[in-house]
Length: 256
Length: 281
Image (cartoon, rainbow over all chains, first blue to last red; front, side, top):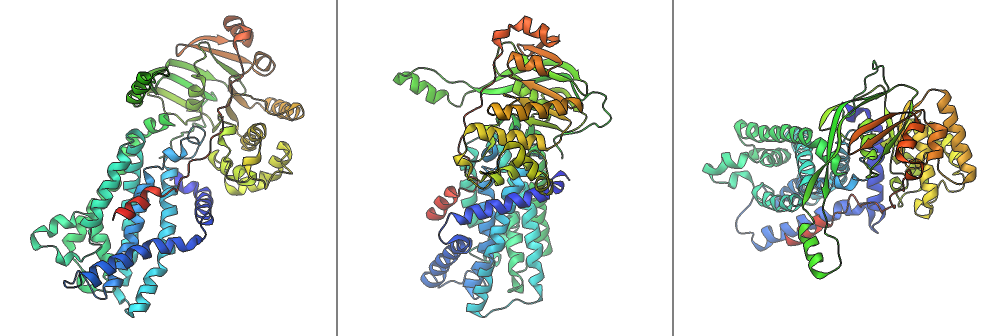
């Protein structure tokens, strides 16, 4: 694929993006950790300390939360910055002989590195709660791969549409906020009432976030059917993203 | 997935086959009054589709140096060059190219003020399809040709537009492509640098490199081009020698295209939106 041929260039630009982003800030790289850390501590305080009466998920809850909040942070930051993926490069598109989707991939990979940099937070949470994963931890990597596929499709879709419809970026923001509460970030899928579970599994993040967690809490596993549904929808978004991009590519280029 | 297809077996260097293109334009109300401002505000997003090229068919043989002139001077030549390079896709018809066409379109605007000159050379080179290794290899040539010895690690913010144009021009030449599509000054820089530019172009001429150039002055076209295409209302009205074209359009009518003013780069990873979201959660 043509993106693969320009991988050297891609990594050079991603490295530049990352260093530029972190150099500007006094605490630099620590921000990759501090932002999700702040979020997880707040959520933990509200749902475990203030409203601790009802157990929302596996114990220790702080670790349960952290394992899902980092991928969620990756998801939401990746998708919302993809709304600007083409607009941000509108000056270079007329002269760039690279594939058009290059800038979407560039944003996605930059965000993926942010996620990888924030992973020490999980180690930190494991150490303070002294809870370590079992053999099923391998599913963590599967979840990572599926999420990457889902995000590639969604980024392409969101980036293409938001060039042509500027309002779309705002719609995406609202949808992402809704998705935060509809996905099992704060809670376990087991808390969803029996009747609504199939509907919940239609959310690709439901399957993905559960897979991240099963290393520590094997009882979180949903039936095979649930995973099939979640990953099917993720695949659907991949195809939808690629098809939408291909159909809109000539119009995206005209906007530059 | 590649947007730009190459046809190594093509006899011509670039071939336009019945190409039509429309471009979206934003219409804006002019005037300073309050009502004009209000109308402008209301109309800002109203878009119209404007025909730019209609049923354009021609082919450029390898080694041709074609001047593209738009008689109405509405700047549709840059769309034609973008189509040639493949950074635009026609609505109808096909554009075929024998090898990669390097577009040299927005010169000064392409240089990012927030990066050093060296970093800019890398970024522009990458956009034009060079790999980082190739850029490293050709770095010495670029620095020497553009005379960047003293400013190579200076932030481009400090560089005058003239120097920025020179950077883009030299990096484009470093691609060693066989086909170029350039708009605006073909020869950039001060007196001394113009000589360097001309001698390089003369070498390329001898090597049979193909050029499509737009927005040139009459003397440059007469010295450099072998052929001219005149567009009017999106159609080719003349395809002949430079002398014929200049007679038709009028010598004084052709001017050198101005660069668009350099703008500060949009901050790609400006995550203000996310932070707002974070607050409301």
